[in-house]
Image (cartoon, rainbow, N blue to C red):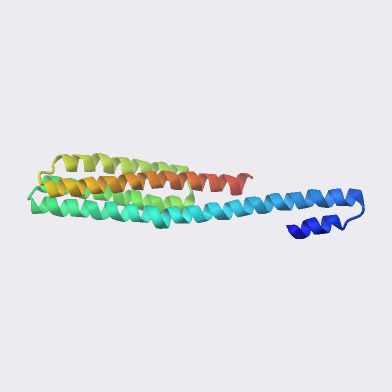
Length: 169
């Protein structure tokens, strides 16, 4: 970009200099948008790799621990519900992958629906827990799954903004 300013200074014809400066301005705007898109892509990758994956893993592991603890308590009905909660959560995780690949808002809504189903079912699981250790594990799982939901919202926002920048600017 500095070269463009140097070149413009070397143009003696005022109309050609004005044309060149207009072209240089367009190039500067393009590069600014390109750099912004690169930053947004990096942000999106960071959200997925550093936050979403971690929160998803912690939630999935927490549900498994809860199911195992409930089986140990011989609370089979609640353990079966934990299995249903895990199925809904895993469906949400698969949906996240589909959303990341497509950017489709309908897929994002489907992920939110699966997550909401998980929350309802896991709430039923935690209400049936008797052991204090199980309740603590459930509380940790709930904290992780809330982080998952917030992170997915952040992913949808960044992805939407990036798609708007790339496809509509």
